[in-house]
Length: 304
Length: 294
Image (cartoon, rainbow over all chains, first blue to last red; front, side, top):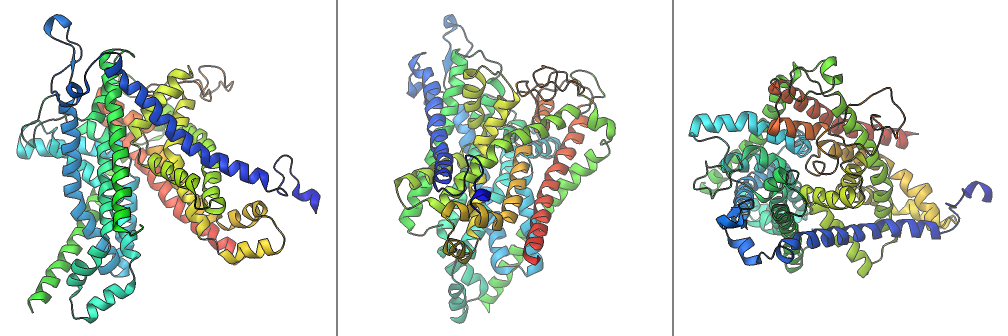
């Protein structure tokens, strides 16, 4: 009996190896987060520390001339245009996607007969599984020509960017929201219906407010995903380093600038360092979103 | 009367919203398969890609995707599994557990481009490996670890407490119980979770641009010495995956038959992703049936 249990160093008889292995693996998660944040921060700070660009100029200036010679007043690395592009596209995507997601989630939990749900649930899981480059490619080959032909302009635009993104983040928001609607006690709905409210009144006045924390979590996660997405957006927004005036103008985001230029600029140059600082900014935004989530969930007092 | 009318209208809107999503998905997939499907043939799937002339295929890219998948899953599965076991079986409510959960949550919401940048800094530059398969596999591990941990936790949570108690009551210790009772019971959930994670490896591109690279050296499929730079198995060679290939030819492609290659590649990629998705469901259900009926 004893022999069959003993298998070299990983003897099951002892508790210790199991504890060490599992604790070590879990510890690895902490280590990787610390190293990621540490390395990106150190590298991203070099624009300010080595090149002496002020943080204020970096964040709030719109002059982006990283390759201009000093005689011409360069080089300048103000990334406000990039930040603006990222923020606008992510916000519009969420504004467009959130209502549709809420509709889908409520439809799946409250309205659909089982066959309706049997169609929608796998559809949304499939949407989540479609690669982001494929979204970008569909945007490039369908949406961009469509916008060019029906609204004018280049087609590569804010409009194309946020439409592609809003479909991409839909599954994220829907799945969080569905979970939180399903976890509500059945009595809420029954009580509302018993008091004479219609189904829509029960949804609007009881169920959605009760699932508030789920709504917020879903929207913040969607926003985080939209903000960090790189390739799909890069393929459809035209990447023009200029402040957009209308929704049909091309635009550039932080992530698309990083994807395009990181490979073409020499390590250690100001241009390259500025790209790392943009990466740091993206990382800080994603940490900020996590913080927002933690704070709102604690305040709401409702666990997910 | 009025509120009943509003209820009707709301119901119609809900149905319409759901229908819109299904239509969007359906039209996207049929568009991809219709346009790309006609280009898929054996030659396209096996020929090497071309840089400036027409007639290229996607053979090496498909191989790279699968090889990278195997490499990265070989690292992700054990670490993710163990960390998930720790969180669901050993962890108590203390600061350490809280720190792990926060880390997993942070890792989970990191944009993949940031993971790519980290990979470029550490796995590519500091190790001196350059753009290589191994750097790509490690970056993908960072990206998929939180997902694997969550899947493990969820599958283990489905294991009834009575099984655990019975095993402990029979004198097994906790580690024995985990290896002999908990993990085998959670197996169906784990299998579908792992396959879904595989799908995520397949669809990732942003984290691979600057880790596995955007080019593939000429490969000699008869060279099986893994240290030879022309060997497809060499983990230290750059490797462009299928998803990266789609991005690259669309943004900086010079080939004249761009549409053919792009349409075909997108269709192949979507077919792989679909089969991973359906495969996960089917296999999970099948294993579950077999385990519960015998």
